[in-house]
Image (cartoon, rainbow, N blue to C red; front, side, top):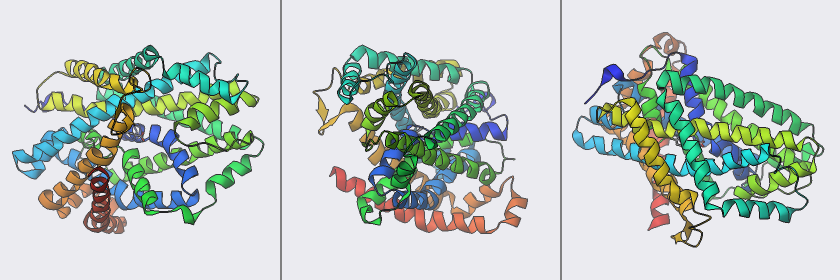
Length: 456
Ligand code: PFF
């Protein structure tokens, strides 16, 4: 059943921009990007990452928004409509399921960050006497099953409350408030970081390119990062695009989103590396960067308390707006395809994501001795999503566009609401034509082959 009359829609262009930017800017920007840059050659990594964004990430992102806007329904119905066959609803359903699975483990991880934010407020993250004390504190929190599960619960509860209020009254309104707040705090932090002693060393570490570290595996990491950061391959952009009006100039609204997303990644890396180098600490990679390096350094420098609170606040905000967008495709699916009302759909999705997320939240406590293919549960499920489900979602969106809908039809949809704009900048159409036909399929094939080789 397609209950078009009860479907949500964006109230303004700025609302759409902040909602989509809220989805894109998340843990992958503030947590993952900085350590990837630090580990894989600084500016050399940034260069291939930006190429990946331009050649595949952004075009697939636009393709998904177009699919959503053209059909004005959730991914399952959208794929079926453009694929002109019931069979095509299945890849659409798969993307919804992927978003749902992502929302479960993403919330578990965000729950830990939320817990760290509370620790920061309590002053527990800026008063360590030794690095051993930092590690001990981290272990004692992570090994407490109740700590992880309760913060996972609170996190889902906050997201569900926003989602309960609807597309305009909840998602749009809250993103319009939370995203500017995130930007302001991030700028304050980077200004503070730049004035710390040895800040230049941090910037040098970050921005001097080491081309020798660019292996094929690093190129694939950059491609994966470009995909995940733009929230493609999991129904989110099709769903958010389906709330967009036909009058909207898609390119004009989406370029600022790409810029904001990249800006946050780079500024977050500057914040982390200026802070780390100010105490002469060689930044570690992975989760240890956030949970070990930062609390230790912030215990050493004046103003560490406020910085720890603000830093974990922005990570929580970024995760919150992303989690909301990961849950929305399931809610839209239940409304559009099953005829449920929004409130019931939010309840079902919230409870489901909470339950499915419990094993992730327990990965380093009750389930710490249980591994899946040698990985803790949360890493295993993230790996399945990152290496199989998300690339598959992007792959199907591209095949749908190339094989069933047609590139020219997609480009015509892109022109809807923007005829004057494309008369002025016709090369933008050529850029998308090239990406849809050439660069995205080639890079997608490479991503896929790599995933297959990894698992089989
Ligand atoms: N784009 C988010 C990030 O950068 O962390 C991740 C994400 C959000 C993935 C929403 C999927 C999703 F539906």
